[in-house]
Length: 267
Ligand SMILES: C[S@@+](CC[C@H](N)C(=O)[O-])C[C@H]1O[C@@H](n2cnc3c(N)ncnc32)[C@H](O)[C@@H]1O
Image (cartoon, rainbow, N blue to C red; front, top):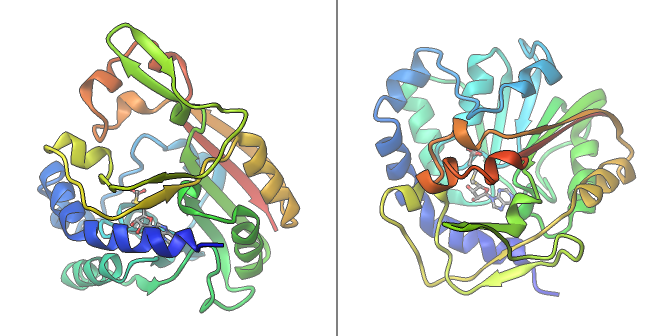
């Protein structure tokens, strides 16, 4: 079977330089903001109530990207952060930025599904995002469980899978994908993220594969790896983030649906 994480790695690696430029356009004060202790939860502040005080706790961010906004926010909240991303370019940019800001985060190139170079029982918290980029979610959950200390916490925060099935147009919403039968979807041209759409678009002639999981798939993978689920949260933060197109942000139908899903589970 084709390793689609490796396929995605090439597409994402090609994007990271531009991706960081888009982040700088969105946040020209990026360096000053994070070096002065800023935090940006992109509308997902409920995560802090769920996880509690992270001061002095060892936290692994599973896919930090070049911007490392969440890794920096956890660091500025007092956690001791290790941040990984599958693309060397993301880690090169994030490490150089951290050095420039005199921020002490350990950045590593790793596939969040396998975490091959990460030892067992290392972390108090695994902060996981974007399961859409994980080919084998069961394996990923087993490895997140493995690298956590006994009693450690998994905080998984993701785009709500219902939202991925829906497209907005001027007349309302179209259900364009079957939530009940999720399958991996291959796109021949990788076209970046919401932030690139906002700044005029970007694409590269490299394929990528998005993996679709239902809420039940996510919860079953977490339980199957041996975690005990503590609580969950569904949010609608579309209006709180600027990284989506204005017509999406202001769409009254979308505002009635969840946009995010968070799970807290214990080892
Ligand atoms: C949308 S970005 C995350 C950005 C940032 N963490 C945030 O949420 O604001 C997704 C990142 O996941 C990385 N990625 C994709 N597949 C991965 C994998 N299997 N393991 C680790 N990182 C992966 C990509 O390289 C990309 O940098």
